[in-house]
Image 1 (cartoon, rainbow, N blue to C red):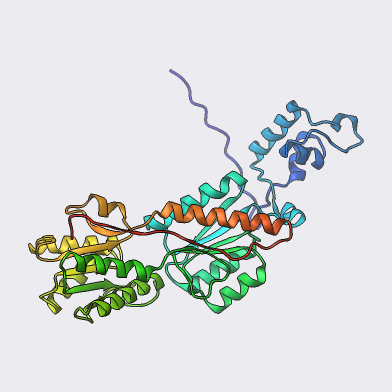
Image 2: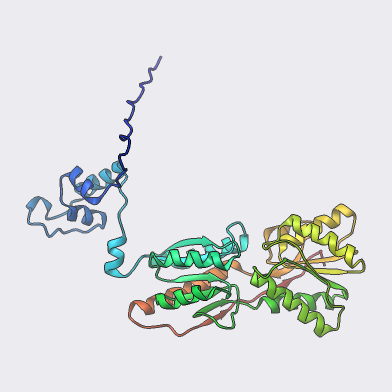
Length: 365
């Protein structure tokens, strides 16, 4: 039978002994070369300025020895000195409201696709729809000197705006058209999009149209959608005030279901509802199915965002559709142009890139 050898136990550091990170000097000592030789090997440089003839060139064999030592010792190159000398950190910072929302994960994918070909990487944080948390992320990210910043929405704390303007790095705001942009903008009008859905429902014969949204304006884009709904209702002369505010943003599927029950109890004659997102719309749909209310015969339901669930539930949800990857890609490409300008001491004039939305008519309306 094969015998299994037990590896020797590793001794733990003595009590009170602080752990120390492995440095380039440690790697150099392991291989028996200078720190410059290690640096050149890691950067694929072919020449060394050392007077030692054995180190005048970094051969491939020596380079492999250096890489092997780095692997064995767990060494990761320290970019700090390079960042300060070149003024290029090699990353861009992005803050999104949520990591489990497919709209924002797809936006991050679009940003990454745009910037990675230029050798830049994405540092991602999420604010949980709180501008105070966004401020904390921005402060922490600026300490690491990103080459550019991409934010979600146009609502920020005064200190966030002050920090970004003082940092002197390009800034792009997305998913909104702020009245007072920090610099560049890639987005659309959430109010206009919601109003377009109301007009679409009106054109299909619905007259008692309600809205389901959150209980606070923490989600400023959701608040804009509610405002767009209200403005369209007033312009069309339809019954106003049929707004259910339920749950802290982002509204969940379960909260959408509870909001639907409350809505029909309060206004039994309602014939259509616009939901702040597809998740809340799906929750409203499931509540209708539990109670035997046929959709759209008893009540029509519309969402916002064109999530995967909207395309695959039964009946499928009508919604405001957006290309979230395109939002991220456009933001990344605009930021790259601004970074290129900044690297040569210039400033790209502020730009606004409009992202189109469309009303996706499906069985739920």
